[in-house]
Amino acid sequence: MGAEFQLFTDAGGKYRWRLVHDNGNIIADSGEGYASKQKAEQGIESVKANAPDAPVVEE
Image (cartoon, rainbow, N blue to C red; front, top):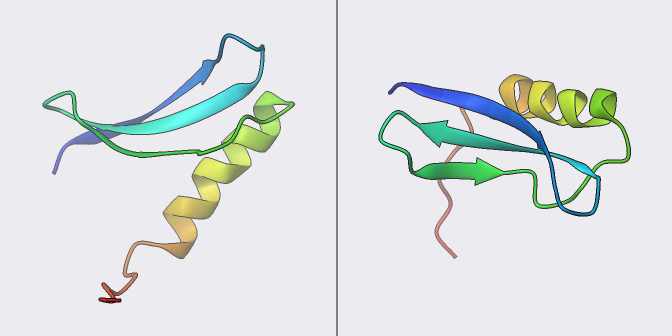
């Protein structure tokens, strides 16, 4: 899978991130705006660290 994290500022001036596949589809996003770029970057690092082997759970 080829994907990249994109860090951007939304219309309200908050920082957000999204994980975008090479084909342009958004795989995941921050779901919330962050007051600082540093906090958004920490969100990205949290996903990288905590979810690489996350199980799939059916509910």
